[in-house]
Amino acid sequence: MTKRSIFCREDGFTFAEILVTIAIMAAVLPALLKVFSDTSRHVSLADNRMTALYLLKYQMAQIEMQGYPEVGQQSDVFGGDSIYQWQSVVSDIESDEIIGLRRIELTIAWEHLGRPQSISMYTYIANREIQQTQSQ
Image (tube, rainbow, N blue to C red; front, top):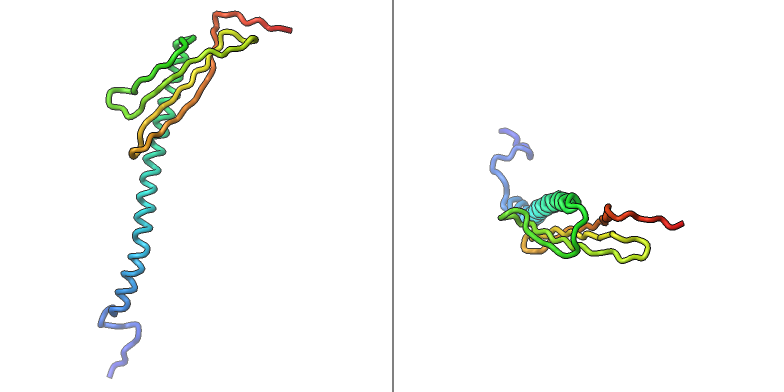
């Protein structure tokens, strides 16, 4: 007669063990899938924001290279099939002490998963042709 060890079973898993395993997997698997899905979505949004930031810097540099911009509003799309749109608003700064100063506000907008997203920045540009006087 041979002794059977409790660690050496030849008959496989019991039905109860299989049910417990399935129950654990049913509880854990949806949470893991949601984590992977959310991570993918956040990576995509971060990529879009990084692209928008680069486009924001590029468009602001284009406006600054033109010199002293005209007051008004402009908007356009980056490229023909781009999801990114830009809008600039140039306004005069009214001050008794400073003349020839304009504020430029630039916004890049796009849509991510059906929701509008945007990033903005502003800067000031002085008219370099006007000589500023310092009062003392």
